[in-house]
Length: 122
Image (cartoon, rainbow, N blue to C red; front, side):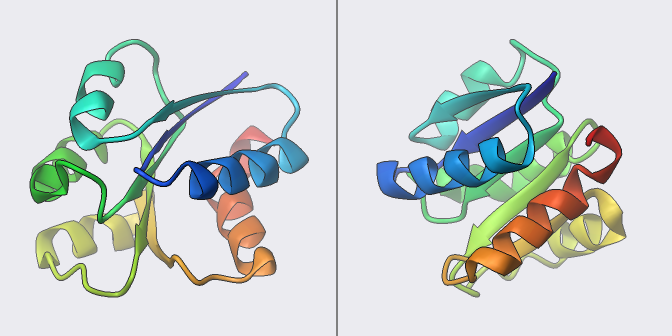
């Protein structure tokens, strides 16, 4: 079973992500939260295989610190409008544990990113 946390304040974006994830994997548990504070509360419940985080969700001023700790334990996709400039986070994600993905990504780009991040789980 794959465990995914989706954190973002847009219910529509979370729904779209869930649809694509379920297309790729049938045995997946997806936890949705609307803020980074909620993500902090849920992160200790399961060992997540992937966290998908919106850079603009409520509480995102703490996103860099959260990602620098979480990337030690799981893979991370940060949905970005290309304004995320924390170089420490960028270098950690580029080391293979995560990636940035534009909120305006195509369906093909999104499916490719999900597949890449969880390729060993499929």
